[in-house]
Length: 352
Ligand SMILES: [Zn+2]
Image (cartoon, rainbow, N blue to C red; front, side):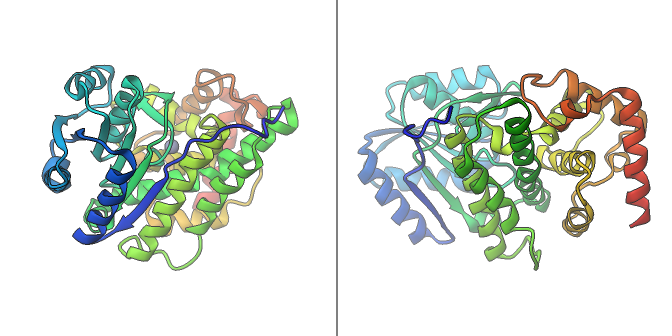
């Protein structure tokens, strides 16, 4: 059954900018909307220097009391520490990368106050989504009420993070295809507008030109990642942005985290190639795109041999979220099948 009258929570202020006046205008609108007198700013050990202190001093200049919390990992302990620091704050603001956004979002959700997301990198789609990854587990929480993207800061982040954001965004193509498959095969409810938003964001960055240092291209990535977050809220789950390709990424984390140093979005890019190949889709365009962006398309290049990658596919199909039907379940992945498919894909990779 599709709920046609569901209530959707979404960020009501979504801005990007590259100057102090852009940020001040955002804060002005934010503080007029939430009327906070006491906020907690969460940042990472590095991002507090990069942009965190600037955020703190600007908020103070509006007469708001500010507490600060430093988070370096996305685990329960950090969430508790932030919640303790926040005390009677009525607003939590995260300034930083994925982990800082996740723990701030989770803490704000736990203490029941609004959350504001100020990402300093674009490495994944958590910036405006209701999902927070804590101790490696995705939790469905409350989306931020406001998002500000400081493009001048984001542009200075290591280029690998931006590439990972592209990988996470493009993986929506695989994720939404799995959702449609689950709808057709097992009758799982589907939310068409969520499919549209998630896929639209992915397609918007696939065209030419690809320049990850160009502000206009960064805006397209940012808008796509925000659309992904909204799609997840509309879906009531991470479904529009997480299918077989995410299971493959989570399986790499589960089996080979000590050995493989790739970022989440890099792994979902690789997972997208494998999943699309499993669907008999034409992967030539995606392969060309990922190669141009410098995202991994070959598991050997991230340090996994064929046997280990076969283990990843079997683990993804049997141990990661078995209730979420994807192409991995559809083909009934076994080790033998995995080795055969990987062999065929390897031939394709070498022939292009
Ligand atoms: Zn993701």
